[in-house]
Length: 77
Image 1: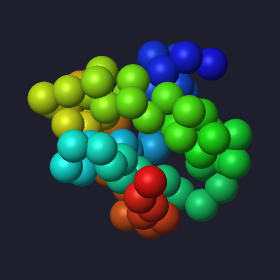
Image 2: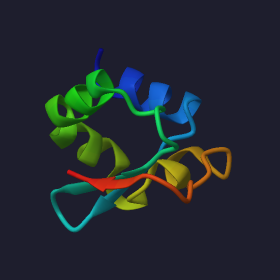
Image 3: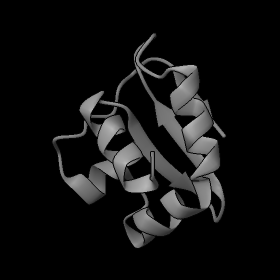
Image 4: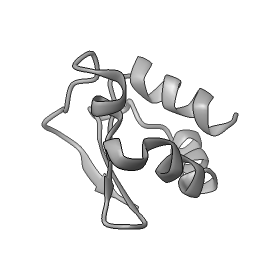
């Protein structure tokens, strides 16, 4: 899975993703939506994801309001 495919998968699962500072990602997901495999892919592709999100700083901003921020399960990496 590459970074773009991963972002599409996160969007499909309604997992919110945001860049914090220069090198941190914050994500929010309902319990069970973010699997260990997806977390592993996030770690693997973290620099590329930060570069893709760039100035938009979040998946919601990149894709529009179709990517809601969820209220439970906030994590940072």
